[in-house]
Amino acid sequence: MTRPYDDAPRLPEADRIELRSLANGEWIEVELGPGRGWFLVERAEAEPRAALVGLEIRRKWAAIVDARLATRGYGARARVFAEDARFALPRLGPDGSVRRFFVHFPDPWWKKRHAKRLLVQGDFLGEVARLLEPGGELFVQTDVDERAAGYEELVAEDPRFVPGGDADGSPRLAENPYSARSPRERRAIADGLPVNRLRWTRLT
Image 1 (tube, rainbow, N blue to C red):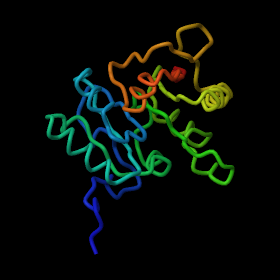
Image 2 (image 1 turned 135 degrees about the vertical axis):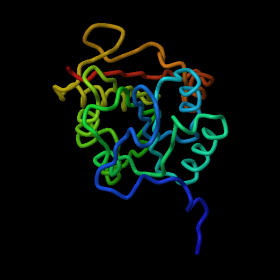
Image 3 (image 1 turned 90 degrees about the vertical axis):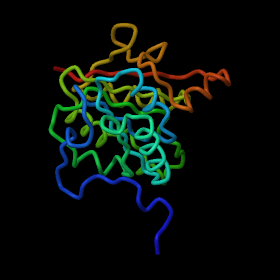
């Protein structure tokens, strides 16, 4: 029996997947959990040199956003795949091939029994560090202050990352510098909620 969105795009069935085979561009940027995908659409419009890859766990939105990018003429350089980033990242390569990782408003689970589902934790950071090029960026946004403080504390313990915020020694950014916003970011701004923006760079 066929389920809705069973035809959502998936990564190739291989132990190692070359990111350059997924999208075309001068460099690679990856969004984890693009949801409805408007950040990717706007990023494709704002930065025509970048190859954009999204990993979205919900097949519905992976299918919809991938088709939307193709309809707008970005299909050769912007793709979304129905994948759980926790399991997909270890299969991607080569090392040092990603210029930017974007993670917008992740980790909606609060109960202790759901801790294993959190994306931003040690194993995730290891894969991001492996894939980022020297000087590459990890950009995380959240409207939950406690989450932001937790991410800041976690990444501070990893010597492979240095803060890349507005002030020396801090990952905090006042503004989003990428000319693209996720729907959640737009909603938070409209509702007057503070958005915590954090950026780190990969040590060279």
